[in-house]
Amino acid sequence: MTQESSAPGVTLAVDGERWRRHLRSVLERRPGLVPVAKGNGYGFGNGRLARRAQWLGVDTVAVGTYAEVPEVACRFDGDLLVLSPWRPGAPLPEDPRVMHTLGRVEDVLAFAGFAGLRHRPRVVLERMTSMRRHGLGAGALREAAGLAHAAGLRVEGTALHLPLVTGAHLAEVDRLMTDVVAAGLDRAADGSPGTVWVSHLTADELDALHARWPDVRFRPRIGTELWLGDRGALRVHATVLDVHPVERGDCFGYRQRSAPRSGHLVVVAGGTAHGIGLEAPTGEGSLRARAASLARGGLDAAGFVRSPYLVGGKQRLFAEPPHMQASMLFLPSGAPVPVVGDEVELRVRHTITHFDSIVID
Image (cartoon, rainbow, N blue to C red; front, side):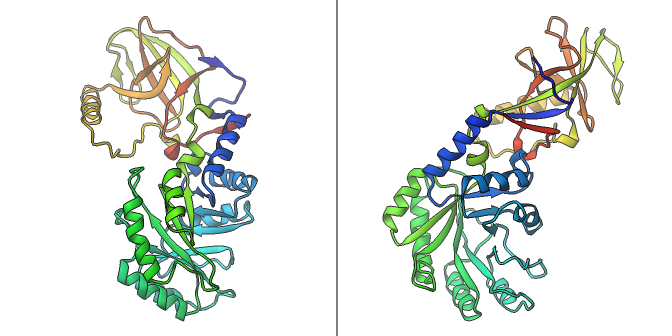
């Protein structure tokens, strides 16, 4: 626990020098880096990430959806790649910096028929990968490329969105690259190297691809590894708002639960409005992960749920489900008891957390 002179709330404290050093190191290891700014901006907010991308000197930023374009566009001078595929009825920003992703032949036809743009639209054709989320098959990629060129669209390359499993993508990318070549997308219309926008490749895999396909420009789109890759530079803490001693059987909270034994109720900043207690499903399939899930389920059934708050070096139990902007923790007798105004450590998923303040040294 530390005393800090900041407004009460949930704070993301960033070691600025260490974080900036990490950002530069990722840029150096990934030539052609395209930072991703989407969702909640990995906890930082998309506007802040856009300004940081400007500082890095990159020429393109990727956003998740069209709704995220304005916040980034006014803070970043370069190009903007929208990752979610365009669908008929979606807006088409007039900004000529925007590149649109197309993942179905029918969408290419609809997009080509869209009237009213004052500039030549820029598109990226997404090839289906083993992710099987969006994209064109081999034959559809050839058809889409032909239709796009015939319609006068400015084809900016091909997108490959790969699974998170790292270090095992080379064979798949090699196979998909034969389809890119067959579609004539390994070269741009002016004869320059074609561009392939890729996700979730390691630095070594990118080096190998550059060696195997020297006439193609691979552009790695990176979010988590870039912004959150050095967790040691990031610390989250929450303010202690109140502390109350309780005896066994004392009732408390919205649901009037009774204290299982003597101890203290600690009211801390952070609740459902911050994303506290809201957990996304995990993809962990190991026996250890399943055992942990069963253990958490047993605690939940008994009315005890482990919180992300650490007091005295241990993750403490929620006394009851988090409130909207505050949470109640139960500390058993003998545990170190914080005082109002203390800051306690908080372990959260940055991609689902809203911070009251972000402090970058």
